[in-house]
Structure formats: structure tokens, C-alpha cells
Amino acid sequence: MPEQSSISAPTPNGKTAMIIGAGPAGLMAAERLAGEGYRVTLYEGMPSAGRKFLMAGKSGLNITHSEDLETFLTRYGAARERLEPHLRKFGPAQIRDWCAGLGIETFVGSSGRVFPTAMKASPLLRAWLKRLDGLGCKIHYRHYWTGWNDADQAVFKTPDSPTNGETTATADITVLALGGGSWKRLGSDGKWMDILQNAGIKCTPFKPANCGFDVNWTDHLIEKCAGQPVKPVTLTCGSHTVRGEFVISKTGIEGSAVYAISATLRDQWLETGTATLTLDLTPDRTLEDVTARLTKPRGKNSLGNHLRKTLGLDATKTALIFEATPRETLNNPAKLASAIKTLPIKITKPRPIDEAISTAGGVAWEELDETFQLKKRPGTYCLGEMVDWEAPTGGYLLTGCLAHSPQL
Image (cartoon, rainbow, N blue to C red; front, side):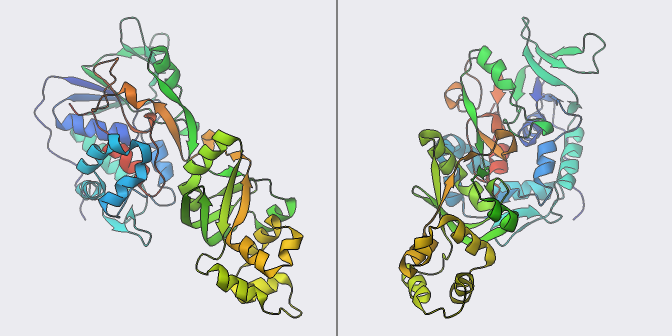
């Protein structure tokens, strides 16, 4: 498909817009505002745009999801009511059309996730930046926002300034799209929260989202299984169950199924100081079937071989069973069957926030009107991951960020 990133520049409306943060939410706000005739200037603290976006696309950019919209909307939890009007206007179908308009073809993977045909994020970002340039948007890199001065000007630290390493800017409207609190090295350091709180704007503390968790594995399990996938499996925490796969790490567990249940697991840990994940290692077999198979005489076979032959369990699942199951249970087929269907894994804590794919927390919804404008700072908007919402991986995070836009 030929590149189609350029669109006609609109008639100027005589107004200016300042966007702080050149990630997906900021870039989309720039495109929409420029399309409405604003003269747009973006300020980005890093030397280039979309660094976390590019990192997300390193192993295949999952840009959205193909499931029906009504199911899609359920993925946003408590924030659904606030996000739904925007997701209905610019949801998965519109995002695929938008990609096509940039000359980026997309396809639906076997899991329902939507990817660019080239898989990478860099071609999309290049086409996007070219479009913004054609719309007259200017981007100033290495401009790190430090707040407002007494004259209510935005202040930036920058090596480009001839005096004191600082420069200021004003505009008719300001859009803050500064990201969450994870992956600081890519620009999302969350330091903006102190600035807003000092300005009297309520923010909810950051929590890791789509994150891994620590487990006190034995050295034997780490040596044998670190880096190995566990699949297929269902994971349950409280009333939340997901099916998929995860990876045993040296410190605990990570991977797509863990990320999908991480909010529930994290909140249980925060509320009680402990959390337990229950695994079903044979999700396609009933407890009765597993019990019947384990009751068969095993002869001279070791228990590991018996599990492999009767249930098809691989060495990693077998090692997990030995890790988490008392010896007396291993020797009782009925109890062992129950353990295989409900294997408890005790979590010690979530991995650090900076390792999380994303964060929950941020600007409290009560501080924003329905257009994402700060009630205490008319003309200033907060978008994307800096607002207090979260969503699982699978294209939902990025779709949520792209759907945010100041509604003027």
C-alpha cells in the first residue's frame, strides 16, 4: 500500500495549542487539534518521540483488539463510564482505518489482537510524524516540563536554552500527556504528579499494572524452570479467572496471563498483604477425569513419568506440582488430582513499578470534566496514562490512549 501519511492542512483558527509529551496520547491530540486549525507545538523531554511506543512494538505492535465493541468496553473496569463515549467515537475499527490512512496495513492475529502487517511500531511512527509535520505541528525535543512559573507560563529545562537551561511557553490551550510512572528511562517518570498535587490537583498514587509478581521459588525450581512457559493453564484470583500462558522467572511469574489478572492479584495483595494465585494445570480436563487417570497403577514409572503419560504434563508443570504440593498429597491420587486443578501459588509482592508495562493511578477523575479538562485549570487537559485508569494488555491500553482527546 502506498504511503498516505499526508493530509491537507486545515484553515488556521488563530489559536495555539501546547502539547507536553510526545507519546501516543500527545501525538493523537496534536493531530486532532491541528486538524481543527490550531497552531500546535509539542514539547518532549526525550531526544525523540514515542520511545515507549517503540519499545511496545519491539516484539510486535499490538495496536488494538478485534473483539466486538461491547466486549471490548468491559476491559476498562471502573473507568469504562468515563472512557466509553470516547471509545465509541474512536475505537478499534476507527484505529484500523486511521492506520490505513497512514499507509499502514493491519491484520488480526489468532488471539484476536490487531497488529501492523510489518509488526513493528517504527513505520507507523514515521508516517505519523510526517503527517504532523504536514499539518504544521512543531516538536521541540529535550524540553523537560518542570511546571508553571508565577506568570503561569509553562517552564522547560532544555540544553537548547541560551540562559540558565530554561525556556518558557504559553498557548491558548495546554495538553498534558506525560505518561504514567513506569519505564522511566523511556520518559515516563511520573514526576509531574508532584507538580499537579502542589497546584491543588488530586492524584491517586501510582500502582504497577500489567506486571509480574515475586514468588519465593526454591533454587531447584529456578535452576530447572526459569524462563520456561507454563501452558495451557487457567489462573484464578478471587472471582477473576483467565486462560492463557505465563513464564516462570527467577523472581516469580510474568507473561500475558499474569498481566491479564494482575490488577486483581495486586489489589488483593495491597488490601491484605498477601495474595494467592490458583492454577488449573489441566484446563481441558475435569477433576473426575484427572482423578481417574491418576488412579491407574503406575507400575515402575516415576511420578513425573506417570503425570506425563496419563495427563500429558510437561516437565515444567510437573516441577510446579512438586514445588507447591506436600509430599502426602503427591502420594494420594485424589488429593493430587485436586492439587493439579487448584494449585496454589503464593505471591510475595508485585514487581517494582518501573518494571511494569503500565501503571494505575494518576490524575483523579473528579478533577477532570467530560472533555478531560482540569476543572481547576480551565484550558489545561490531561490525557492518556497520566489519568487514573488501567486496562490489560491486548491492545486495550494503546486504544485507550488514542481515544483520549480534548473535546473542544
